[in-house]
Length: 97
Image (tube, rainbow, N blue to C red; front, side, top):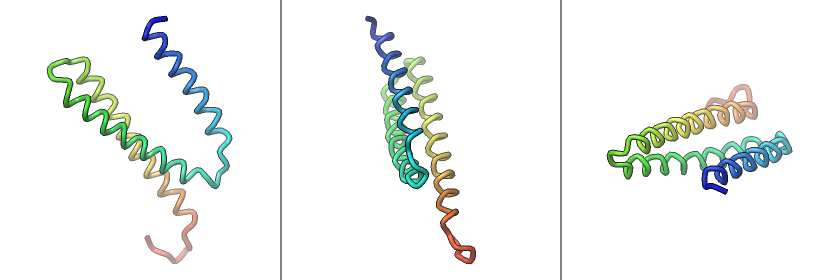
């Protein structure tokens, strides 16, 4: 089995497992789960920056690092926006931020 096919199998199995696990999360745990996902995406941002820094003149690694940085930032920002909306549901009518 080649490293590429092994990586694809890990991606496929991880995706299926993640889909199964997320589907079983009760609504009361969605906000803490989102916060945990934001922390993991923050680690991905750091890994992307490290990849970009160490890529040197390798164009493929620079593109991969920039792409992963973009997706990770999109995930972090979206996660914080969704978490803020979820927490807003628990605020009282007269309370300000």
